[in-house]
Length: 431
Image (cartoon, rainbow, N blue to C red; front, side):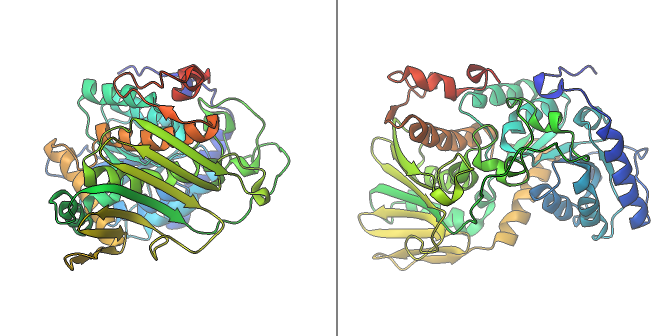
């Protein structure tokens, strides 16, 4: 099968690929095991064979969670940074499983005939390029949130998923929490009365990120491949591991990081699609002058019958409604507040429930793997995920342009704001 390799993968694989394979081989030898590259592919009732793309933080966690399941075999780990392989291999081996293969070139992973599904936990700007290639290669996809890096990527991803008929689940684990879904059922069932206002937020302290000079990239890193479709620029440690999310070329800041979760629940509770008007205001704190995304931000989403408010603050531990992060539905007959620990109704019928991050995580993976086998639609389908991510992108766009936006949901444009077109899609940004 010949893959259509776009600009994301046309970067030359340089000599550091050899170093990456050597590092992974060393990790495997240290674990005392060998890879299973030649084993037979899984049948419909057998163990699923998976690969994890991007294995430093979240990808390493996923590798460990998957390795703990008897119905899954983690066959391949893929990353452009060879330095992250040993810890990721250890996460699998610690579950009593064979060490997976390690690969620097994602094309080799997607050409692997025995891989049933891939888990994508790379930086945001590479989510859609990798997911599209995986679908075209016949792999099902678990895609970490946010699903997209910009609004314009949404239709591209949805179309590829439909054309290839692949199963794609987005990593908004709250959708698999029975407790939180029960809370949303209370909202939709009318127990709160009319809900005209929803508030979503995350508040916590993040360490300042002072400026650093540009340097040569680490010897273990294929930096050109890491940049992918992002604009070329010298390597800077501040824009790399984890902190990449605070720079527009690669992520959408705290709003994309956590808003893709909490705004998703806000949308589900009121069964909302796209907002019609968006107004944002925020600032970058002086102590974090090397970053680009706002450290403090408020966004108002006008959805007609209801308004949704977003707030994040990265310099305080004093949260909203007594919680560091969550969603509040303000109804005429009560207020429902939820977070990852559970939910409770105030000033109304005394309803409540307890949630568990561990349980929702396990249930979300279970739902995806079951859908891979049954070909059913997962609980977090890509068509929904791109809208929730899109809300985050629109909030950031209003902040960056310093003006209120009117959004045309059919055309995915801001008709009154021509300058918005340059930030709505990847192609418009000429990257």
